Length: 149
Image (cartoon, rainbow, N blue to C red; front, side):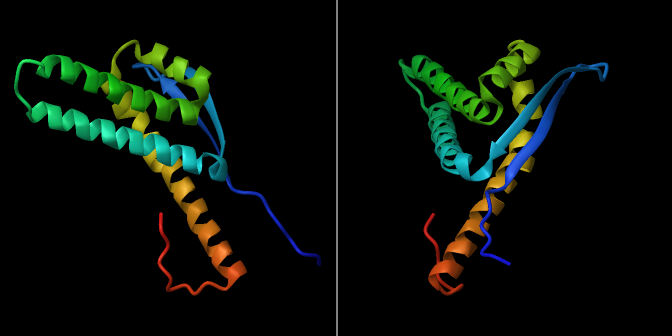
């Protein structure tokens, strides 16, 4: 048997957009290479966290310019969410989701975000852990060494 090399894991799933009667209106195919999107996902996720923190801080603030600042923070938060969805679902998938929810962003987040947290994130994290393990084995790095993220 020769020396074996392989490819990174792939996420191949579908997201069904189901109406209130249980009828599938759209099916969005998700096919992602976990290594390819890991860094981009991390960047988008950090962007979302910063937008959430800025929005939360403004909710506590008071003053004359508060409403304009809150509006800007809401827009930044929306852009961060759309960026994450665009990365995972692609431009066409994002538009199908937006059209399906027709402006009901809270409902969209409640229903679509679990797909990211339960399917995409664990797959990306598992791939990163496997990659770290392979690198450690290839370079003789002890398991007790702490990795920087």
